[in-house]
Amino acid sequence: MTTLDESRRPKDALTADVAIIGFGPVGKLLAIHLGRRGHAVVVVERELGRYPLPRAVTHCSDFARILQSVGLSPDTIPEITEPYDDMYVWRNGEGETLLEVDWTGRGESSWHNTYFFHQPSLEERLDALVAELPSVRVLRGHEAGALTQNGEGAVVHIRPNAAGEETRISAAWVVGADGARQHWRAGGLVLQFLPRDPKRAQQADLDPGDAPEGVEPHSLPVDDAWREGRSLVATVQDDELIDPTVSSERLLYQLFHQRGVRVFRSRKLIAECSCSREGVAAMLGNFSQDDRDHMVENGVITVTCEFCSATYVFHPSDVASDVASDVTSDVASEEASRAES
Image (cartoon, rainbow, N blue to C red; front, side):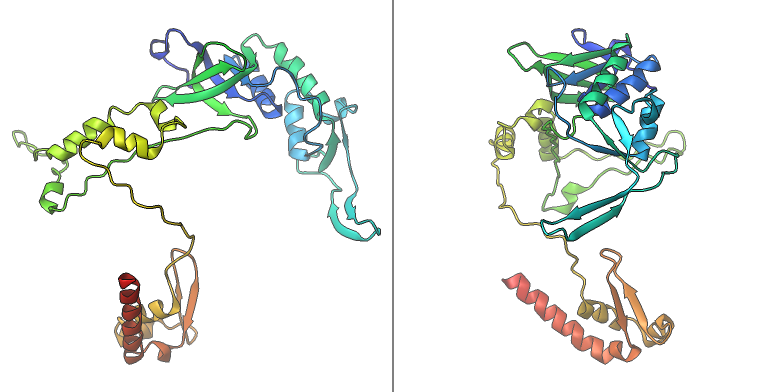
């Protein structure tokens, strides 16, 4: 496993090979496997104690195999988990069967396909295994906040649920195992240079790497506007990108208010492709008759859109040049109407 260079760790931070956010069954099992292999682990859990009620009540053969890997095979903890080798049936108030699921049999790992289990009791056993590992430290009553990273690892900012100062955990790896209970935020900023004069967008040629000795690499002066924009964006801090009190509009204004900021109205995104039978027919009409003849297979021409996988089937006579020409005119008129509206 990759470990973080000690010289790169913040001096006031807790250190670990792995930081785990969340101490449910997944976080516990991961901590056990890592701790048994000698890795330094810090676990952050917002709750002060185990949740007393079961949130999950069944598990499969794959999870049984995972339990076996930490020494808790289902057959050794029958008071916690027991196999269910029968049909799973839902019925309404009149006794009519609504749904039947076959939960019988065993999986590829030889464990039963289905088990019923008591989650609080299982977590208690997992907690006992974690407590035996000196390299695993569990911080209950703490909540993870911002996360920053570099090429060496990451730093997690945590804070006690009660009043208290923020603490940092510096780790080579950070694993989110909080069951989506934690609200994570991510942010990013992309700066693009789109001058009206194409000459201002010219870039120097890449160094070929094998130029003869003495040949000066190609270079162009950096546009002043592009240099200014990059310099301003470089001042943005990681926490500004994820701060819920700093909106995108506010951040842009802070950066570029002297130049002026224009925010376009949001547009609804629709998951659909712009392809159509008419458009494909018009495209086929642009090919020569000889090309279209070579496209015929089993008496038809078949075209599959590479974006949405829609398939269009045409008889060769449907895409003759004169027919396709009419279609092309109709499509062009329709696009022009859209542009005007």
